[in-house]
Length: 213
Image (cartoon, rainbow, N blue to C red; front, side, top):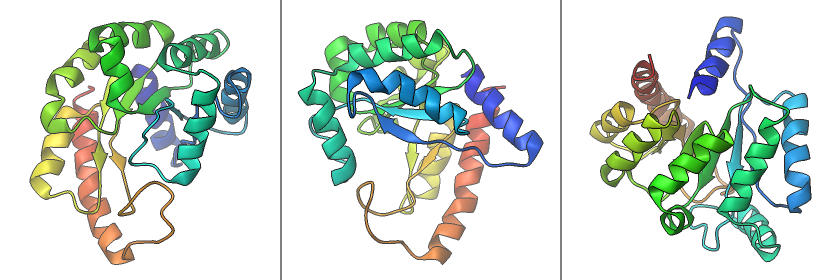
């Protein structure tokens, strides 16, 4: 979490916006992932979201689905992604890495074992798309105890009460899903609605940030 906090603090102080690219681990090949992470940092990435390949990425569109399929076809699993982060950390101790994925691989490994291995590898935050905050309180506490930020999703349809609850539980930052639909949906929602929700989203993010101090 400290690396995430430091990342956003630098951007706030400079008046800039953090660049957070996403890549799927193991795509196009396992050997490419760590060099790709370093290349993203060299190109200006402030924080990297690293996708954990999963066979049924229900919240993702066809581009990420195909990336996961290619990685899985090469045998890339959660243990391999953790090893990739550990390899990345040998040359980069400052850039935050946030896992983005689904519950099944974590459940298969065991949540405590996952939290320990993620901490040891150098993971800074975790987004689990199908862990709703209402059912992930214990998991969020476990991650926070290991120094890992539990990061949750907000959307244009998230009600005020749920935003408040997510702000109290989340650490690091909150992930705002600006489109209704899967990742890569080819439409934009009403800009006025996005502007209004963006303000409420910032309040949830501030609540999450305060919990880190």
